[in-house]
Image (tube, rainbow, N blue to C red; front, top):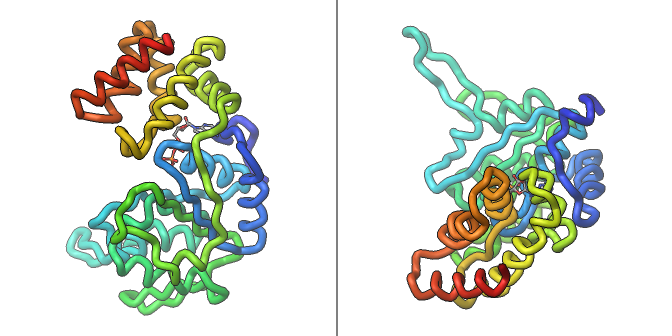
Length: 262
Ligand code: ADP
């Protein structure tokens, strides 16, 4: 392990995820993190990469992301053509960790480069340079996706998902979420109690009036605004209501919930 405690991003464990990650790393197994947006997946990966002392290459996938964005491409530089490694290739070459956030968003050709890296071959063929890279023992691939988005076109194919050890994430239980939000925002824990309570009520509405419940990330934003002096009701409006919906009637319903909690 390298680095001091202070180099390690704060992460409060919820279950056995740290142990599972460490075992997956030691045994060269790729890892899939499932769970809603803003529940701590990215922070968890940053924390574990620092704990394992490995450099981390994070890529937020989107629908234009191609295999070449991950592996690399030839660039023109001062009249010369030079090869520039993409983040996946950098991680393979240096024995780092590569985290592909929301991997289902990426183009189909991305899975083609991931497959030989996620079985016992652990290789990355670079067609354009003619190289065949063997991933060192320290290389680890981590991907995440949000199974909550009901888009059949954007599900991970079984042939891909069955290559990963998977951990299910969700918003932390209230006692842990209170500590997380207090630590991240600086707002005293007793002032965080009702925010977490409100978040739980909003999450219960998922699938009815709301597509997604409020994330831990938004709770941290809300507490940060309150800690900076914004009145609670205004902070809640800006960080916990407006980001969730544009629907006037739904917002009115949520406001009533806020009044009931505060
Ligand atoms: P995701 O990758 O799941 O979308 P993030 O990892 O970016 O979500 O989490 C959003 C924020 O929530 C983080 O920046 C952090 O402030 C906070 N967070 C959530 N869960 C935890 C946790 N268990 N420990 C520490 N921080 C957390």
